[in-house]
Image (tube, rainbow, N blue to C red; front, side):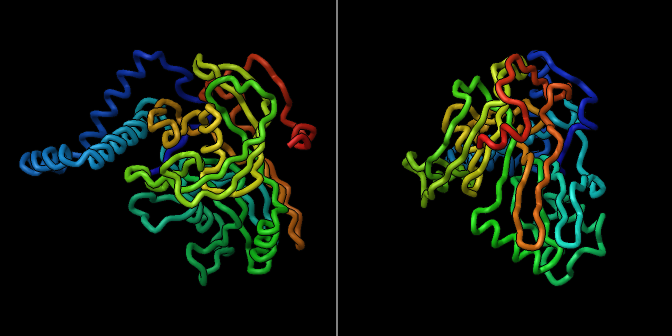
Length: 335
């Protein structure tokens, strides 16, 4: 399934009323159902229905898949988003040692299933910088850290072994500073929050690759995780209370910020996975790696992107009513 993006931010529809959205989602569910079941014969479909009714876990997995496909179709056919291409690469920094890019949302860094994810960051890098690729390593490039498929923003690539080792040491000694922007549901009441709760794997059978906090009975092998949150603005997203926040990672657990935001009752807008698989309407998950400070012994990396969640981008549908902190160096120093 190809990844998607808004057709040049700010173009296309700016908002939809709920009736039109409901019609669009219904249309997309039909498309998704056709995509899922179109190849089934009547006999095989009947067998499938009988078997799925006997297996509620299978039925739930099919239900989740249909919702995900419906969300994808909504973005493509209703929101007017377009598939990624290998040419969609934005470079933030390039030196002899490091390459820093602004990764797009809904894009894998690399994959072993190119039929499912035909375009990845590795593909974009190999297309734009074939002379920098190292044929001796898988995918051709050394990624210093990871970003989720749905998360956009700063991504650092080491261009040689020495740079890779230097970045690894900086990360392992916790010298790296990573800052994220997010839009979350609800008005966060405190201007600052310290979120500290262990995170482990969600052991429920239909929640593979998901994480959860350690207070859940189904949490496995939790490890301590800490994050800081600073409120930038309060306002409304699509008419619903929402808050724009700046967050800093103090540890590096899988899905850490997404899980911590869910835990405090302010799920990130567009986070399908941690909204109980209900948040299908937004054109993206509103989590963005905004800045990285990586003090390596061979080079200091301090790179930031533009703010993708500005109220001046119509497709974001973000309407701030109160500014608590500006996005500047003074605010960074508070985290």
